[in-house]
Image (cartoon, rainbow, N blue to C red):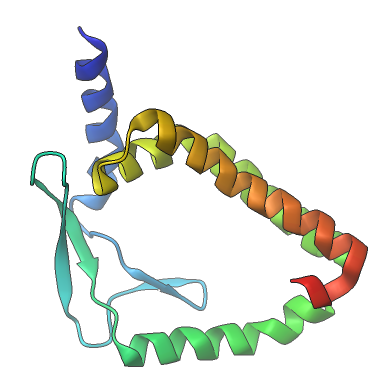
Length: 143
């Protein structure tokens, strides 16, 4: 099996979980359909195939997400920096653990080279590591 065939098999395994339910909005920690119920198909620029259906967010979804963030902020703000740091580290570790999956899916969704997306996925984890340092040094003003 060639490297391309191996990578396509991995990609298909990663995309399988999106084939039925697609990608929903994440609001207030819950995965949900768009308030309107509308979706759109995301198409791979690589071969023009349909990747999956995605919840089509609207102003109402944005308002709901902004309100959920506003409601959650006091608990985050008031949390001890050591606890925020632990959460940010867990997020970074989760991204690192799934870096290959993220890279393959993003590569297919954006048409970017796998070598670039592999680095971008790990860079995402580094962002959370950076803010965990900023959070513990400077309090909430820097988050």
